[in-house]
Length: 420
Ligand SMILES: [Zn+2]
Image (cartoon, rainbow, N blue to C red; front, side):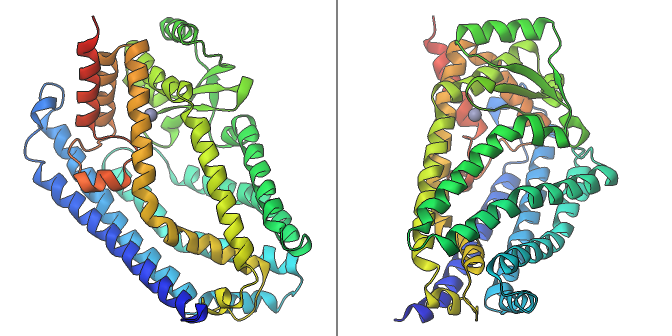
């Protein structure tokens, strides 16, 4: 079979198999969570009330149902773009303004980006102001929502358009092996974002204040010393202006590593529990999980660029996806839309690796803080975030980056019982 016939058939096959798999997994998840919502699982009876358990079940089902509608909509939109020929029409329309590869390319991405933003907006609004609102998590008002949106548009334009211009130039000017240079540019760009993020990007959206002196700071300093971790600062972020979900994370590289706590986390957990959560995050760092995933993503993006290096001048790649005029910008755009279809069934592999890392980080936390504190913190966060304690097995295996509560807690209890 010729590639020109193979591409459209593969597109439909992958689009439908991905969608059906996702809808099936969602259906399973809703069914399982509902079926287990009548009673609190015995392991959690002491700490979780029936009301909290049922809130988590109903929140999970609402989110999952909404996700199914969203997935169906996204698949139809992608089908219309490609098979329906809308992408080609927009491309021809942009072409009528300029045939110059840079002008055409930047304009094409800007127009498609804005259209995508607009058609996804109702979903974002519904998720924030209906679902999150209903369960008491949304703290955003219309003003924050709109200013966030505008900032995101300006920021994406300021960062992505130069990257895009660079890539298009490389593709156009550097000959057959452009993809090695394209990848290098892409990697440098990612490092630039990592460097800019803590000081220039994150502060556009949130306020960061140094963690106040006191019991918590003292305990953190002790932990950092114990595990020999040098942080250039401890910060509290005002996450509560948008959502009441809690979290903690690291940003920066090398000597500029910062530890950031969501204010919502500090409010909800005791000092001991915050320390256990931080020890878990430090576990990720000490086991080099962050470095490993960075290397993995570099390898994957190199493979992606190598494949794009083969496809970008392949006539069938364009005509097979309904595109009349070949261009470097269209090759990039098509590739970025199609790659997720071709790699979707690798999701369980990445979820598995991530869950393995979570166990390692938990083990580290148990060793350097206290397993029981981490268990208490986890249960508290599950309750506060209304995360379900009873997810469907297959759904978890496919998607979840974190092991289910029950497995994690059993694992931590196992470590705890080994300690003298
Ligand atoms: Zn983790």
